[in-house]
Amino acid sequence: MASATVSPAVKKSGDEIPFNKHVAQHREPADWVADIVIWVLLALIVVVVIYPLWFVVIASFSNPAMVSTGKVTVLPVDINFGGYEKVFSDSRIWIGYKNTIIYSVVGTALNMIVTLPAAFALSRVDFKPRRVILFLFTFTMYFAGGLIPSYLLYKDLNLLDNMWVFILPGAVSVWNLIIARSFFETSIPEELHDAAQIDGLSFFGYFLKIVIPLSSAIIAVLGLYYFVGHWNDYFTGLIYIRTDTKQPLQMVLQNILLANQTQQGGAGNGGQSALQQQQLADQIKYGVIIVSTAPLLILYPFLQKYFNKGVMIGAVKG
Image (cartoon, rainbow, N blue to C red):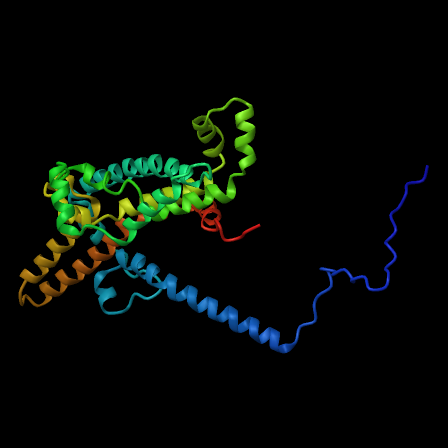
């Protein structure tokens, strides 16, 4: 039996002619000029954003004398790791790393444990007081007690000079709570809850076994937001921590910078010695930037695919 072939449909009057993607569209010279201008502008923007970061990287292990004289532009010159040696020779750097890792990991875990259930509860239409509770959450975004009342409160709670001062006061970010709530409202179909009830799942079981596995994108985004916030937390250590062994990495790096600037200033009018001290201080400054940001730069590529998906939450409405 001969195989049947499907013949193209006969076009009727008024039918649209289908677009053939294989046929190149006719482009005017003005279109090519516009494309070139756009690509040139994008390339310039990329250079403006990337070059300062690249310069910090190459300046951190180039000869500081070459950096100060402007001979380091695109590639490192006379590779010198003196700045890194000075930074890592200070034992406080390892204590700061340990403290910051602890604060960031424990703090992020607590943030997720608190934020996700709260956001899911506020996303439920059958939860009647959700609008009032969300208003109270949002109110705290615009009005706060201030530094002195916060200090007195933390003192009464015995949080001063305590690692929990980095973790407990910021257990919930209202902005992240709103993002997670929007995700649960728009991305988790209500039919899943109905099916879970038929299968005998409790509300808590539905959240743990169905909602959480479907929320990898928002979990990655919020986790990255919270982790970066804890990692860069400088103000808390400055105000509420007095013991050196409890200081986060950002405070340790600041102390190293201040110590080298003091040494450079104490060199007085020593001529060449003072100049060398200043150049070394500048190299240490670049090294400190790399040391403080390298872990986040290493972590981000592994979360990028989830991050790109998560930041688009709510952008398209079906």
